[in-house]
Length: 530
Image (cartoon, rainbow, N blue to C red):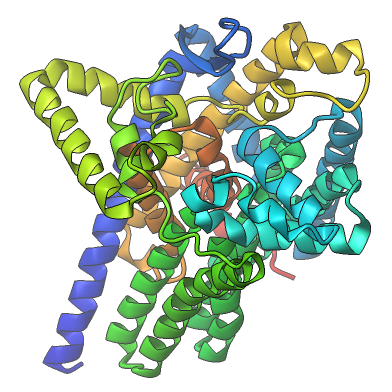
């Protein structure tokens, strides 16, 4: 190996170690916090506040006991002889169950769009009816022009299926979640090549039903999640198989994901960084061209979509609210929780006469004021950041029920649906989510620890998701907070949680049931790959 190649390899290993270490630190802390405390969204906190976050103390001993039981059951599952065909069948069953739950919830909850969702859906319906004046009826798209991406998707749906197809649109979200789950299962295969990992990933997908319960929420969240997961799959597959042409669908998918919701730029950045490391190690300059294609498509599509809407409305939406406004919000107190929505992003551009430059200047002044205050009160700043971070990642339902419970309904709902939103059934469901996510976080932490300390377990493809998770934790720690923002990362975590349990099983097996000199079967040979 040449000195230059050896240096490139060391640099790649160092960066991957740092990625694993930072993401490990984040989820180790979250794992500990989840055993001690749980965040809860108070829908009926007050007449004007339906999104207040409470911090509830947990029964630590009970949490640890249930966690140990779940880990023991998962480790025992690793002892089962399983073929890949069996894992696929379990995956199919998990997806079918999730789909059934999603369809039931959409039909039973009868939820209607609210807030931003309602603003976009209403305009999309009117555009589908040929009423282009809807684009300029109010200032919504002047304030948030990036929403034209999801507007295009919604308008297309209503043109195909009719403007009254709200329920059908929500059911299409159920299909998208199922497609995301298929992508997660395929990702687990390409990354870990172990039927046990695929099997436990399938089981966890069936247990973590939060994403499918979010199907009533008509926004860019679910379409973007599905598109980004499949982009990760093609990116990881391209690097593993050294067939870089597969980066073309990866580029298209991540560009569409970011068009649906800007938060998916986190995925784009992670993919590009790992592609750069791949190019550095393998001296594949063409990889840089594909990375550039990803970036170009992602930043070009929103511009084209906005331009076509501006052309139809004979207006210019401009740049909208500066991104810094969400950063300012992220460092402000709110009646909901530290760093959560507080109307700043919706009003600051209007307050500055729709002038982008004036708004940006105010954003900078407001941010400086907040940071100066925090600098003089470090204890308060630490408390603020703790509440902000944990309110997003330690709210185990991720507002999946909340999004249906706070808005209007299209008809009468059952007592069960009412209780899931605001009653005992909801408390029971939250308790279930709490235990499941504690298990996922702890198992994920084990998997990240393996990636951190064992160089041979790392690869460019495997490190995409850990980098996404660290990037997401950092981004959402800085910008406007909301528990719902974290839900898109839950499916991505599951293969790594399953990998963590698999490695825990193998380590325990080697220690407790070490191979005897008579030639008994090695622990790692238990799960076949056929």
